[in-house]
Structures are given as C-alpha cells and as structure tokens.
Length: 322
Ligand code: DGY
Image (cartoon, rainbow, N blue to C red; front, side, top):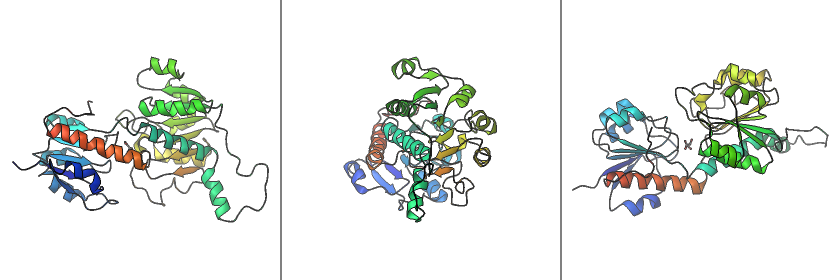
C-alpha cells in the first residue's frame, strides 16, 4: 500500500521531515516566505491524507469539500480561526493545533511589546540612529512606568496566565476578564476578575489574548477605547480582527489612549501604508508571537506527531475539541 501523502503548505527544513520519511510521502510548497497559492492548495489537498497548514492558509468548506481523502489538518499555531472546524467535524476530519509549546514564547513577546511601547524603545533607538541625540534633557523620550501599574488581561487562557506571571515579576497588579472565572488563577497568582468595561477603566495596560470567535470580533471597538484611560497602553498578540482598527486609529490620533503595541492585524500581511503604521504612538510587528527558533521547531514536531497519530489510527495528541 502506498504511504499516506502529507501536504506541507510551506517549505520547512528537511531535517524535521526525515525521521518520518519511511512512513509518509511528503510534498511541500516550495517557498518558505510565501504562502501556497489558493489554487495549488485546492489541487494538492484533493490528493492528501494529511495537511500541515499555516495560519495564513484558509482551510474552508470549499477546500474540505474537495479533499476527499483528507483525515487530518494539523495547524502550525495554537489559534485555528483559519479553519472551518464545524465543516471539518462534519466530514470526520481531525483538526489539531499546537498549544502549550508556544505559551511562554508568546507571553515573552507580549511583554517585550508592552515594554517597548511603554518605554518608547524603538523610537529611542531610531533617535540615536538618525543622529538626533544632541543633549540630555529631563523628559527626553520619557515613557510610562511598568512596575507597580495595573495590567488588565483579556482572555485568561494559558498565554494570559503566562503574561500574568511575568507581570508579577514586575510588581504589577493583575486584573483579568475571561468568559469564565478562574478561581485557581485568582488564588495562585493572585489576580482579580473584572467585567470587561471595568477592566478597561482600571487597567494601565490592556493586553488582548482572546481567541478570535464571533463574540470577540471587534471586541475592542470605539466604546472600548473610550472606556480606557488617556494614559492606557493597548497590546494585542491574539488576532487582529478582535480590534476595530479604524476605532483604534481614531483613539490613538485623538489621544484617547496613549499608545498601542500590535503583533496582529485584521488582514495580514499589512504594508507600510496601513494607517496604524504611520502613527508615532503605535508599534507594529509582523505576527511574530511564537517566532523563536526553539518554539517554531517544537510546533513543527508537535504537528508531525499529531499527523502520525491520526494517520496511524490513533487519537491526536492535541486535537481541537471545540
Ligand atoms: C498562533 O499560534 O496562533 C500564532 O498566532 C501563530 O504564530
């Protein structure tokens, strides 16, 4: 019998695939930096038993309807809003993601973004590089303190908790909002639960770690930014579409909030004409939350373990159970 075919939607180093070559036939999209074109993905998915997909691939009803042999989609991300989970379930296709292995790395990035935004790190670096540093002055590039401030975490999942642990190291007070209250987190950290609007009013730093769902789409809208303090800093490391970007732009321009640090955008990739990029009080990163060499390696390995389990007739290690 022919080995199962796994289609990998991005070029990844052969060293990850080699240990599995005797069990599977791999085909990879040839480019590392460019996503597979839709028509190629649709065509290759028809022949595949498994897909190793990226957040940038749309695994929707159309694709799943064409993929008659497909048994498993293993997404290289903890988020899976790029996949039609309901349709996959209907067709008996297992979907897996990569929780846990990226938790600390993503929390590190959230904190890096928070600190860089609060202390104007990028602006200060540009200031020196552009040869503008002529004098010391008392309020030159003065930012906001981080220590002893209040961080408001919206979405207290694994990454939210890891951000909260880091915040504790900075003597911050942690408040959070979540669909359900987390008694264990409240006691362990400690952290205090707040209603969404209350959190926005109290927090000095509002950090979005919510998954993208129907309920969270544009959760951070004009009203939300109006609730926040003028000195607040907004950080988003979850998904761009949880923010109404036009409302955020207005809030930043009109100084309704002080600054924003964003790793994610509604339509990625953005270019440097995007209105948020032009704002001096907004730091924009290219969706690098989990992008450390170590973590990306572990994510690939977990995807391959999931593919091996499902195609071998066993249960996936980290199935999406929604
Ligand atoms: C995730 O894992 O969902 C990230 O956003 C991808 O890096």
